[in-house]
Amino acid sequence: MARLPRTDLVDVPQHIVQRGNNRCACFFADGDRLHYLRLLAEAARAFDVAVHAYVLMTNHVHLLATPRHRAGISELMQAVGRSYVPWVNKRRNRCGGLYDGRFKPRLVHSERYLLCCYRYIELNPVRAGLVSAPADYPWSSFRCNALGEPDSLITMHPLFAELGETPEQRQERYGAFVAEGVPDQELAAIRSHLNKPPGRPKKGSDDFLQHLGGNEKII
Image 1 (cartoon, rainbow, N blue to C red):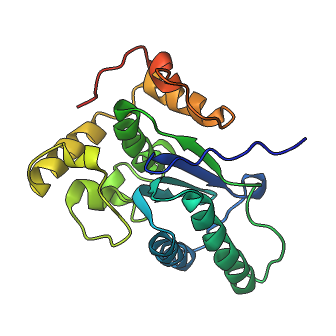
Image 2 (cartoon, rainbow, N blue to C red):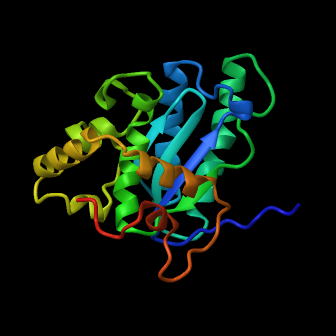
């Protein structure tokens, strides 16, 4: 069966997921995660992609990113994979593929979904039972977005900037939003959106909002 074409719209955020092969590990130690983030930052600069949020789990990665030109996301992920996979294979004395096929991108074409996506990504370690609070997990963008810690990888999305007039105000409001947790209905809507085949959104439609039952802003 032919692969479906990527939907890659300029200046439209995407929620990107890449999983380890057979859901096995793609990060084996903190050094692997640190190297991956370095490669990601280099590729984001090279291919003009703004990364807004991320989390590196043991066997998968979530990113929220906006391409500034066509194919930017594909170029980003391919560049990282071409460097990271042979590096980790040599370091871990392994061979073969590391990822479960191609990465999975989904368009984020509503204001409400964007902020929910931030929260969903950065609460992943809490849902997995790795930590009790997102600030306790060092391999996500939460400390930057909610606590103001420097992270050269992160570019603030304009809608995130609207949370407040000062960094402190934005951090406080976003931190409170994350502290609410992800409601069950919202969690189901995001997972449903991620599991659907990629495609160009139709005007006036939003699968996430249809599942969630509303179109108002979260904040």
